[in-house]
Image (cartoon, rainbow, N blue to C red; front, side):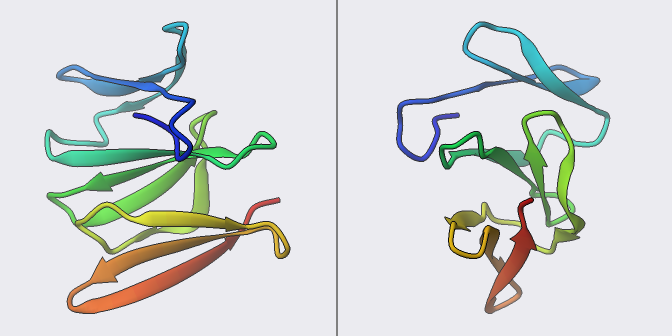
Length: 114
């Protein structure tokens, strides 16, 4: 999973019981036990200044969740999207803007980062 700038990356490992997110050294950052089936897509975002996140879209339930690299969910709810999302960081407002599709609409969700 390359980061937005292509200079940083993570490894996503899946077995029958869990999905693990690993850093470049192969150390596990966090795991999701039994939360995802086989149909999911993940995107890694590195915005710099320590702001890194992973967007995981479950294509069976059509839900997307954002996680920081400690495995904590970002935002209070999942986003209703069966397709990978796009995330932008707006530094002036310290917010993440997540663009996603729902039915035939393009939606935007804003979440305060800190």
